[in-house]
Image 1 (cartoon, rainbow, N blue to C red):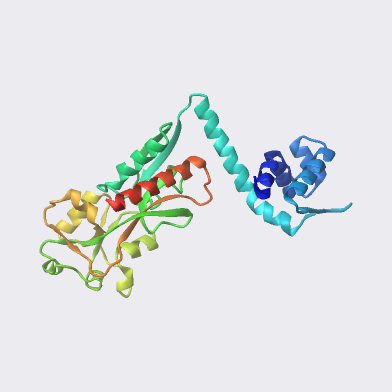
Image 2 (image 1 turned 135 degrees about the horizontal axis):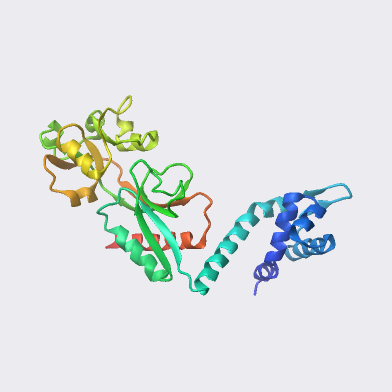
Length: 306
């Protein structure tokens, strides 16, 4: 065993908990009270930790306790370590007691995409002890329920909103949805500059500028998008396009809804593909969430290789 591995083994959770409380309080009396131990016992644990990692973590004198540079470095890491270990133990206890762990997956705008069941099957194979509940969310929630806490993980098309961590999975061609009698429908492929100035269908109640600009090709025009129709479902969107009220940008997998009266699809010229990603709340270090993301990435790699 290497010296580094030996050090990691020798440092125990009780040392890290004692360090974290003292680093928060910067007072031995208050920290010992929180830990329900004597000041001498706390001091001994801190000395053991310093000895085992080979660094002084606190400067002490009769009037105050302060963190050293090494102490501040360790403090930046310790909360996430304790949270991850605590979550892992909680999950394990539940399974050991006969409870089935559960994750909630929010999906948004992925209807018809073949990778979704592949991701679910991959995770089920890796973690048969975990139940996954799939919930579809409204189009006005770009985080697929993750930010408001209704879902643990989300499966969404980018861009994702602030406050989430993103793991890209697969790419898909972006296409134009056009009324069958639209002037651009005569083209084999549509220039984004031509489509960007047309009236778009957009999701009612979704006022997020980032996603609206992405979906309406804002980088190809001057000024805001013209909204020709507000919609609540994919079916509403297709109806608005078919009725000649609007155009839209979508992904190729929307093809499962076709044929749809009055609507044609055309490729978009030189437009970067859409990216499907799995997201979680920023700072969410729960082991089951991380495990789902790992399984999803594995399934995506296999999907892309097919």
